[in-house]
Image (cartoon, rainbow, N blue to C red; front, side, top):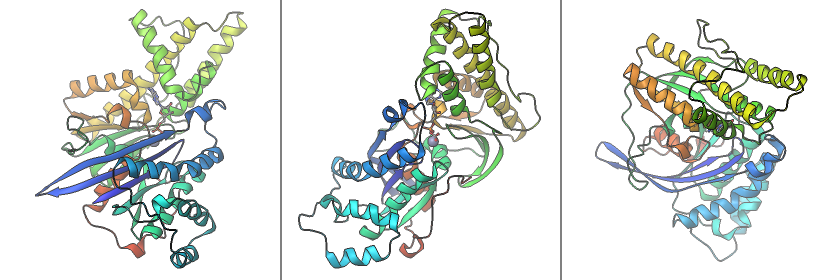
Length: 399
Ligand code: KG4
Ligand code: ZN
């Protein structure tokens, strides 16, 4: 089965083609193509992501990106003649106004008229920025009608969970999944989420706790902005913190930040207080007539990364102990952070549990994880086509 994954929940327009093949009891996966078109350069100048701008960019980029992905994967099925007018009229009658717009764009592209060798579509329908999500969902629906193939909705956070199951030792043509000893715990840390999720089985999740305010990635982005660093802030803070740690292995501790909610008895988090402390720290520095030098920025970045990591580690450790967890999975853009990765590697070793991390390039948003979540949902069976048209984008969808 060949699955087209579509991801437009935030500022990455991503498409992926994943082939699954059943060999005896084992499913083999082959990545035919995985494309991520980042809008970072566009949003960077405004210091964050504007949903309506993200939506416009997704709508502009999806059709050419799909043509490119089909060509690169050798699946393009180019039709030279114009599309069948009667079929188009029939299809158009089934669509909403937004879907019609995307269909019109699809129909302007002869490379997409003929159905390529794609069996089904898996599209992120939440959580995320709702206008951005709708573009992917409408695109999937228009494509599913045009090509007469089913489309299924995928939860973006489930995508982040399954991204770590892909075995990085295998090559992209013959991927298998790592074994998953249950129960497992997933710590999901992204730009929009921070949550601890108990995994009783794949697709059987219960949320132990989540952030009450800012997500970890959001805190990285906001603190970066306070330090005058560009969006997205995670990689920038990480770089500064790394330089500081190399120069001063023992923390200088001139600037101190809180570890919010670290000792509460629940699994909830709060990160907006750290950000406010950074704001006050910077204000105090300026009131003392001092400059916010690179050296000071470095110290604050390191202290911030330490504070966030300590809280994440502490709460995760508690959840592992409480539920006799066998496997720890970490997902979401923040686990691209090398320091946080290393701290969780040390924790897993100390607690003698298996740690599954996504490869660095699959930590941040991508469509391969969406196609894989779709594959695990389908288990080799195609859904019925007539059941597909009724799902919608849901910005606050939970696991
Ligand atoms: O999962 P993701 O790509 O998008 C969402 O689903 O939100 O996560 C994006 C977040 C951003 O807040 C970004 O600053 C953060 O992940 N991030 C990092 C790093 N790389 C990306 N945070 C800390 N360190 C990094 N190296
Ligand atoms: Zn994400």
